[in-house]
Length: 330
Image (cartoon, rainbow, N blue to C red; front, side):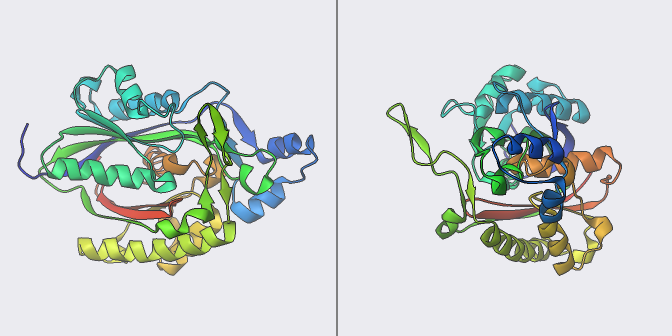
Protein backbone atom coordinates (compact mmCIF):
# COMPACT_ATOMS: atom_id res chain seq x y z
CA UNK A 1 0.00 0.00 0.00
CA UNK A 2 1.19 3.50 -0.82
CA UNK A 3 2.43 5.15 2.39
CA UNK A 4 2.83 8.59 0.85
CA UNK A 5 0.48 11.27 2.15
CA UNK A 6 -2.65 11.64 0.06
CA UNK A 7 -6.09 13.22 0.20
CA UNK A 8 -9.59 11.78 0.39
CA UNK A 9 -12.81 12.44 -1.49
CA UNK A 10 -16.41 11.36 -0.97
CA UNK A 11 -16.88 8.88 -3.82
CA UNK A 12 -20.44 7.80 -3.05
CA UNK A 13 -23.22 7.81 -0.49
CA UNK A 14 -26.17 5.69 0.53
CA UNK A 15 -28.84 5.54 3.17
CA UNK A 16 -31.45 3.24 4.63
CA UNK A 17 -34.49 3.94 6.78
CA UNK A 18 -36.69 1.28 8.38
CA UNK A 19 -39.94 0.94 6.42
CA UNK A 20 -42.22 1.69 9.38
CA UNK A 21 -43.06 5.40 9.42
CA UNK A 22 -44.54 6.78 12.65
CA UNK A 23 -46.25 10.14 12.23
CA UNK A 24 -46.76 12.57 15.09
CA UNK A 25 -50.45 11.64 15.11
CA UNK A 26 -49.54 7.94 15.32
CA UNK A 27 -47.20 8.63 18.21
CA UNK A 28 -49.71 10.85 20.01
CA UNK A 29 -52.34 8.12 19.77
CA UNK A 30 -49.94 5.54 21.18
CA UNK A 31 -48.90 7.80 24.06
CA UNK A 32 -52.55 8.57 24.83
CA UNK A 33 -53.09 4.90 25.69
CA UNK A 34 -50.67 5.56 28.58
CA UNK A 35 -52.34 8.83 29.59
CA UNK A 36 -49.48 10.86 28.11
CA UNK A 37 -50.69 13.85 26.14
CA UNK A 38 -48.99 15.27 23.07
CA UNK A 39 -50.04 16.31 19.57
CA UNK A 40 -48.72 16.92 16.08
CA UNK A 41 -48.96 20.67 16.64
CA UNK A 42 -47.04 20.48 19.95
CA UNK A 43 -44.22 18.44 18.40
CA UNK A 44 -43.94 20.45 15.18
CA UNK A 45 -43.92 23.79 16.99
CA UNK A 46 -41.10 22.78 19.31
CA UNK A 47 -38.98 20.60 17.04
CA UNK A 48 -40.07 20.77 13.39
CA UNK A 49 -40.43 16.96 13.40
CA UNK A 50 -43.43 15.52 11.56
CA UNK A 51 -42.52 11.84 11.40
CA UNK A 52 -39.79 9.33 12.16
CA UNK A 53 -38.81 5.84 11.02
CA UNK A 54 -38.83 3.18 13.74
CA UNK A 55 -37.18 -0.22 13.40
CA UNK A 56 -39.18 -3.30 14.31
CA UNK A 57 -38.12 -5.23 17.40
CA UNK A 58 -35.21 -7.48 16.56
CA UNK A 59 -33.84 -5.20 13.82
CA UNK A 60 -30.29 -4.25 14.72
CA UNK A 61 -27.96 -1.40 13.92
CA UNK A 62 -25.91 -3.66 11.65
CA UNK A 63 -29.10 -4.56 9.74
CA UNK A 64 -29.59 -0.89 8.88
CA UNK A 65 -25.89 -0.25 8.30
CA UNK A 66 -25.44 -3.06 5.78
CA UNK A 67 -28.21 -1.71 3.55
CA UNK A 68 -26.82 1.83 3.62
CA UNK A 69 -23.31 0.48 2.95
CA UNK A 70 -24.42 -1.51 -0.09
CA UNK A 71 -26.11 1.55 -1.57
CA UNK A 72 -23.02 3.68 -0.98
CA UNK A 73 -20.82 1.07 -2.66
CA UNK A 74 -23.17 0.97 -5.66
CA UNK A 75 -23.10 4.75 -5.87
CA UNK A 76 -19.30 4.76 -5.79
CA UNK A 77 -19.07 1.96 -8.37
CA UNK A 78 -17.02 -0.21 -6.02
CA UNK A 79 -17.20 -3.78 -4.74
CA UNK A 80 -16.94 -4.83 -1.07
CA UNK A 81 -13.48 -6.32 -1.72
CA UNK A 82 -12.24 -2.83 -2.67
CA UNK A 83 -12.79 -1.62 0.91
CA UNK A 84 -9.83 -1.73 3.29
CA UNK A 85 -11.31 0.26 6.21
CA UNK A 86 -14.72 0.14 7.90
CA UNK A 87 -15.71 2.66 10.56
CA UNK A 88 -19.18 2.64 12.09
CA UNK A 89 -20.34 5.53 14.25
CA UNK A 90 -23.04 4.37 16.64
CA UNK A 91 -24.28 4.67 20.20
CA UNK A 92 -26.55 1.64 19.79
CA UNK A 93 -24.19 -1.20 18.77
CA UNK A 94 -25.53 -4.71 18.30
CA UNK A 95 -23.34 -6.00 21.14
CA UNK A 96 -20.78 -4.88 23.69
CA UNK A 97 -18.38 -6.67 21.36
CA UNK A 98 -17.59 -7.56 18.63
CA UNK A 99 -17.94 -4.11 17.12
CA UNK A 100 -20.78 -3.35 14.73
CA UNK A 101 -18.07 -2.55 12.16
CA UNK A 102 -16.74 -6.12 12.37
CA UNK A 103 -20.26 -7.52 12.04
CA UNK A 104 -20.81 -5.30 9.00
CA UNK A 105 -17.47 -6.28 7.51
CA UNK A 106 -18.43 -9.96 7.75
CA UNK A 107 -21.88 -9.40 6.24
CA UNK A 108 -20.35 -7.60 3.26
CA UNK A 109 -17.70 -10.28 2.77
CA UNK A 110 -14.80 -7.93 3.46
CA UNK A 111 -11.68 -9.39 5.08
CA UNK A 112 -8.35 -8.12 6.27
CA UNK A 113 -8.77 -4.38 6.59
CA UNK A 114 -9.29 -2.51 9.83
CA UNK A 115 -12.83 -2.34 11.23
CA UNK A 116 -13.92 -0.51 14.37
CA UNK A 117 -16.70 1.55 15.95
CA UNK A 118 -16.58 5.20 16.97
CA UNK A 119 -18.76 6.40 19.85
CA UNK A 120 -19.32 10.15 19.91
CA UNK A 121 -23.14 10.02 19.92
CA UNK A 122 -24.63 12.59 17.51
CA UNK A 123 -21.14 13.78 16.50
CA UNK A 124 -20.17 10.21 15.62
CA UNK A 125 -20.25 10.47 11.84
CA UNK A 126 -18.14 13.64 11.82
CA UNK A 127 -15.65 11.91 14.14
CA UNK A 128 -15.62 8.79 11.94
CA UNK A 129 -15.21 10.76 8.70
CA UNK A 130 -12.32 12.72 10.16
CA UNK A 131 -10.68 9.49 11.34
CA UNK A 132 -11.00 7.88 7.91
CA UNK A 133 -9.57 11.00 6.26
CA UNK A 134 -6.58 10.79 8.62
CA UNK A 135 -5.98 7.16 7.58
CA UNK A 136 -5.89 8.25 3.94
CA UNK A 137 -3.63 11.22 4.53
CA UNK A 138 -1.22 8.76 6.17
CA UNK A 139 -1.44 6.44 3.15
CA UNK A 140 -3.02 3.62 5.17
CA UNK A 141 -6.29 3.27 3.28
CA UNK A 142 -7.50 3.51 -0.30
CA UNK A 143 -11.27 3.03 0.07
CA UNK A 144 -13.16 3.32 3.35
CA UNK A 145 -16.75 2.75 4.34
CA UNK A 146 -17.82 5.38 6.88
CA UNK A 147 -21.24 4.78 8.37
CA UNK A 148 -23.52 6.38 10.94
CA UNK A 149 -26.21 3.95 12.09
CA UNK A 150 -28.58 3.92 15.04
CA UNK A 151 -31.57 2.11 16.51
CA UNK A 152 -32.28 4.78 19.11
CA UNK A 153 -35.79 3.43 19.68
CA UNK A 154 -34.09 0.76 21.82
CA UNK A 155 -32.94 3.28 24.43
CA UNK A 156 -35.92 5.65 24.59
CA UNK A 157 -38.25 5.94 27.54
CA UNK A 158 -41.59 5.82 25.73
CA UNK A 159 -43.27 7.28 28.81
CA UNK A 160 -41.21 10.49 28.53
CA UNK A 161 -42.78 12.69 25.86
CA UNK A 162 -39.91 15.16 26.18
CA UNK A 163 -37.49 12.70 24.57
CA UNK A 164 -39.40 9.90 22.84
CA UNK A 165 -40.91 12.27 20.25
CA UNK A 166 -37.47 13.51 19.17
CA UNK A 167 -35.69 10.44 17.84
CA UNK A 168 -35.81 7.95 14.99
CA UNK A 169 -33.81 5.07 13.53
CA UNK A 170 -31.74 4.92 10.35
CA UNK A 171 -28.34 4.60 8.70
CA UNK A 172 -26.29 6.69 6.31
CA UNK A 173 -23.01 5.81 4.66
CA UNK A 174 -20.30 7.27 2.47
CA UNK A 175 -17.41 5.74 0.60
CA UNK A 176 -14.26 7.77 1.14
CA UNK A 177 -11.56 7.19 -1.48
CA UNK A 178 -7.94 8.26 -1.73
CA UNK A 179 -7.26 11.04 -4.21
CA UNK A 180 -4.43 13.22 -5.45
CA UNK A 181 -6.71 16.23 -5.01
CA UNK A 182 -8.33 17.16 -1.69
CA UNK A 183 -12.01 16.54 -1.11
CA UNK A 184 -11.94 16.82 2.67
CA UNK A 185 -10.44 20.28 3.05
CA UNK A 186 -10.45 20.68 6.83
CA UNK A 187 -11.84 19.07 9.96
CA UNK A 188 -11.97 19.88 13.65
CA UNK A 189 -13.15 17.73 16.56
CA UNK A 190 -13.82 18.78 20.15
CA UNK A 191 -15.28 17.53 23.42
CA UNK A 192 -16.07 18.77 26.91
CA UNK A 193 -16.50 15.85 29.28
CA UNK A 194 -17.67 18.13 32.09
CA UNK A 195 -21.01 18.43 30.25
CA UNK A 196 -21.85 14.71 30.33
CA UNK A 197 -25.05 15.06 32.34
CA UNK A 198 -26.96 17.28 29.92
CA UNK A 199 -27.35 14.39 27.45
CA UNK A 200 -26.66 10.82 28.46
CA UNK A 201 -27.84 7.23 28.72
CA UNK A 202 -26.03 6.35 31.90
CA UNK A 203 -27.15 2.75 32.46
CA UNK A 204 -25.19 -0.39 31.71
CA UNK A 205 -25.27 -4.14 32.16
CA UNK A 206 -23.07 -5.55 34.93
CA UNK A 207 -23.12 -9.04 36.44
CA UNK A 208 -26.13 -9.87 34.29
CA UNK A 209 -28.25 -6.99 35.57
CA UNK A 210 -29.14 -3.50 34.35
CA UNK A 211 -27.31 -0.98 36.53
CA UNK A 212 -28.41 2.66 36.54
CA UNK A 213 -30.86 4.31 34.17
CA UNK A 214 -30.80 2.61 30.76
CA UNK A 215 -32.80 5.31 28.99
CA UNK A 216 -31.71 8.45 27.18
CA UNK A 217 -32.06 11.58 29.34
CA UNK A 218 -31.64 15.13 28.14
CA UNK A 219 -31.69 18.68 29.46
CA UNK A 220 -33.14 20.24 26.32
CA UNK A 221 -32.44 23.88 27.17
CA UNK A 222 -28.83 23.19 28.10
CA UNK A 223 -28.28 21.15 24.93
CA UNK A 224 -29.80 23.92 22.77
CA UNK A 225 -27.56 26.57 24.33
CA UNK A 226 -24.41 24.47 24.00
CA UNK A 227 -25.21 23.30 20.48
CA UNK A 228 -25.69 26.69 18.84
CA UNK A 229 -22.65 28.13 20.60
CA UNK A 230 -20.16 25.39 19.73
CA UNK A 231 -21.48 24.80 16.20
CA UNK A 232 -21.12 28.46 15.26
CA UNK A 233 -17.60 28.56 16.67
CA UNK A 234 -16.66 25.29 14.96
CA UNK A 235 -18.03 26.39 11.58
CA UNK A 236 -15.97 29.55 11.62
CA UNK A 237 -12.84 27.72 12.77
CA UNK A 238 -12.98 24.98 10.14
CA UNK A 239 -13.52 27.52 7.34
CA UNK A 240 -10.57 29.55 8.63
CA UNK A 241 -8.45 26.38 8.66
CA UNK A 242 -9.37 25.71 5.04
CA UNK A 243 -8.77 29.32 4.03
CA UNK A 244 -12.31 29.93 2.79
CA UNK A 245 -15.01 32.34 3.86
CA UNK A 246 -18.34 31.21 5.23
CA UNK A 247 -20.21 32.75 2.33
CA UNK A 248 -18.32 30.37 0.02
CA UNK A 249 -20.09 27.41 1.62
CA UNK A 250 -22.76 26.05 -0.74
CA UNK A 251 -24.54 23.75 1.73
CA UNK A 252 -24.67 23.54 5.50
CA UNK A 253 -25.53 20.06 6.80
CA UNK A 254 -25.67 20.18 10.60
CA UNK A 255 -26.75 17.39 12.91
CA UNK A 256 -30.51 17.13 12.53
CA UNK A 257 -31.71 17.52 16.13
CA UNK A 258 -34.23 20.34 16.12
CA UNK A 259 -35.30 22.75 13.39
CA UNK A 260 -34.99 25.66 15.83
CA UNK A 261 -31.30 24.88 16.33
CA UNK A 262 -30.76 24.57 12.58
CA UNK A 263 -32.46 27.85 11.72
CA UNK A 264 -30.80 29.72 14.60
CA UNK A 265 -27.38 28.41 13.54
CA UNK A 266 -27.88 29.43 9.91
CA UNK A 267 -28.85 32.95 11.00
CA UNK A 268 -25.81 33.26 13.26
CA UNK A 269 -23.60 32.23 10.35
CA UNK A 270 -25.40 34.62 7.97
CA UNK A 271 -26.21 31.75 5.61
CA UNK A 272 -29.47 31.96 3.64
CA UNK A 273 -32.16 29.34 4.17
CA UNK A 274 -31.58 27.81 0.74
CA UNK A 275 -28.08 26.75 1.84
CA UNK A 276 -29.40 24.84 4.88
CA UNK A 277 -30.22 21.14 4.49
CA UNK A 278 -33.14 20.08 6.71
CA UNK A 279 -34.31 16.48 7.03
CA UNK A 280 -35.28 16.46 10.70
CA UNK A 281 -38.94 16.88 9.69
CA UNK A 282 -38.80 13.51 7.90
CA UNK A 283 -36.25 11.56 9.91
CA UNK A 284 -36.35 13.12 13.40
CA UNK A 285 -33.05 12.94 15.30
CA UNK A 286 -31.18 9.83 14.17
CA UNK A 287 -28.02 10.67 16.15
CA UNK A 288 -24.86 9.51 14.31
CA UNK A 289 -26.94 8.68 11.22
CA UNK A 290 -28.41 12.17 10.79
CA UNK A 291 -25.59 13.88 8.87
CA UNK A 292 -24.94 11.08 6.33
CA UNK A 293 -28.71 10.63 5.88
CA UNK A 294 -29.05 14.36 5.16
CA UNK A 295 -26.03 14.35 2.82
CA UNK A 296 -27.38 11.42 0.85
CA UNK A 297 -30.85 12.99 0.66
CA UNK A 298 -29.33 16.24 -0.63
CA UNK A 299 -27.36 14.36 -3.28
CA UNK A 300 -30.37 12.31 -4.42
CA UNK A 301 -32.55 15.42 -4.56
CA UNK A 302 -29.97 17.26 -6.69
CA UNK A 303 -29.14 19.88 -4.06
CA UNK A 304 -25.63 18.59 -3.36
CA UNK A 305 -23.58 18.50 -6.56
CA UNK A 306 -20.02 17.94 -7.65
CA UNK A 307 -17.90 21.03 -7.13
CA UNK A 308 -19.92 22.34 -4.21
CA UNK A 309 -18.46 23.16 -0.83
CA UNK A 310 -20.34 21.35 1.94
CA UNK A 311 -20.01 21.97 5.67
CA UNK A 312 -21.05 18.98 7.81
CA UNK A 313 -21.40 19.37 11.58
CA UNK A 314 -22.15 17.13 14.53
CA UNK A 315 -22.97 17.87 18.15
CA UNK A 316 -24.00 15.42 20.83
CA UNK A 317 -23.60 13.74 24.17
CA UNK A 318 -20.20 13.63 25.70
CA UNK A 319 -20.39 16.63 25.17
CA UNK A 320 -18.90 16.34 21.66
CA UNK A 321 -18.90 18.46 18.53
CA UNK A 322 -17.02 18.92 15.29
CA UNK A 323 -17.08 20.01 11.65
CA UNK A 324 -15.86 18.68 8.32
CA UNK A 325 -15.55 20.93 5.26
CA UNK A 326 -15.58 19.00 1.98
CA UNK A 327 -15.53 19.78 -1.73
CA UNK A 328 -17.86 17.29 -3.40
CA UNK A 329 -16.41 15.48 -6.41
CA UNK A 330 -19.32 13.12 -7.08
